[in-house]
Length: 121
Picture 1 (cartoon, rainbow, N blue to C red):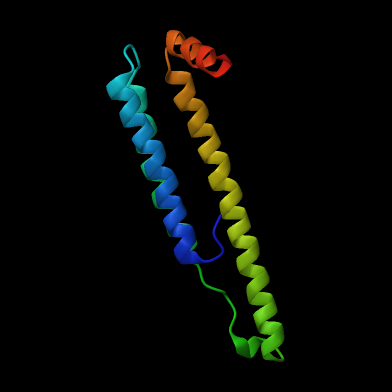
Picture 2 (picture 1 turned 120 degrees about the vertical axis):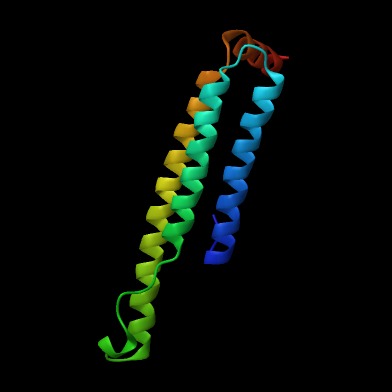
């Protein structure tokens, strides 16, 4: 994922939007699919996006005056943001994986079989 806040926010919006789009396409094109479960997944994606975007807007809890020099301050600030964003990315990816598993579980067995056959061909 991205290296700065602006790009990270864009990637989160793109990922969640693409997954929601896949749910809408599946609702419209796959007969026998559970539309209510797909609606729940879309709401879950919206919640995931909102929470992830809210968690990106963080600030370093200490000021430069707390450190003996600017180098130590920048080093500590960088380490803080690296840890926070690494945790956010890991949790976001875990949640996306769970949502994708739920999306696949909603597919009817006939569609799953057709997907497997298409991969083998």
